[in-house]
Image (cartoon, rainbow, N blue to C red; front, top):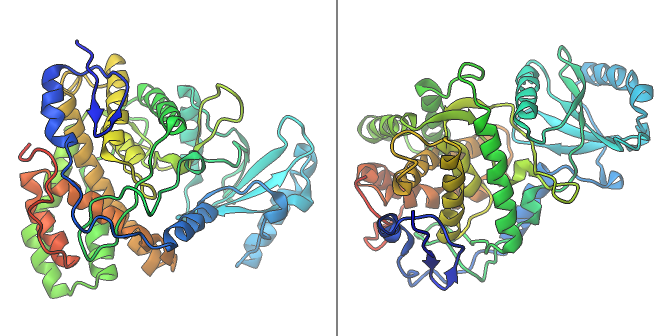
Length: 448
């Protein structure tokens, strides 16, 4: 195996173990076309505001003085919580005056933080997950699997399954996302397709590189611990239900596509495209899948040399190995230059194949085949998340999620433009978004 230097535009990344033939295979993918004439359009200043909103909604705030009060819509659940919480005060030396809401996420769960007089556990997290809406047993099960794999997941200190309350170790207040460079509206942008708003790219620095390498180390530990039959299967039925969120919530609800038109789209385009995407993805090797492995769910180390903490893993399944690396690098809330995505994917590929995780479908010998599989898996995720964000807006009135729609449509269009089989889906997306076809918007190889 000959190591070659892979150079992207003006940047030269570290030596990567690619053969010359593999480098040649990747050349069409990494030689992105010149920016289109309109690529200098500026992203609205609201981008920074929206990112701040996301941070406040999704991050566990650290300052007790900034905690909003913990309020309840149900008096009976409030009373249930007070009885449970008060029973723990002496045992865990809780400072009751510091209890406050830390975060609420995109599910029905929410989290509170409370400080403790115990110097070994000075801060603790409380999960509030109504049992009629959330299955906390999955969280408990996967927490144990995370610990067995050697990952830094929170210790469960108290668990009331019938009530849906958990007292957890606090992994800190700083996510990996908070340490990453913010996108510059005046800097590099993803290629545009009017009338979609441009998507600003974040420019990776040395700290970014180091954090992503920590993330792929944690991911490989998780995948190496996989045992078939332990977690639910990420099978055809589940993949199909996820894809159905796109047509039901994004196309029908968010975009308002009429039902008569949807009938045609489903029969002629979406059903066959969904089946193709599912079959491609099910051919990948199988491991444990976190299903939301991204910087917002990874916590910065609290000491020098410590690993990243891992959160929000309760929906883990057993399925395609490509899923988590796709979600890590094609994030719901931040976009990177393609050369950086390739660089980190190559590093993951090198480490995963060295551990024997890719001994199927020729993935261990052919990075191009593996990268293609990651793209197909990412396409499935982006269609699903576009549907989820539309549902959060239309059903749950969390409208800020739709601000990231241009990012997802860009991801979807970029992948569809690479593969001849996906041209019908690209045509449908362009029709719904009122995008005029641009022949120059073609990335990489097709027909694979």
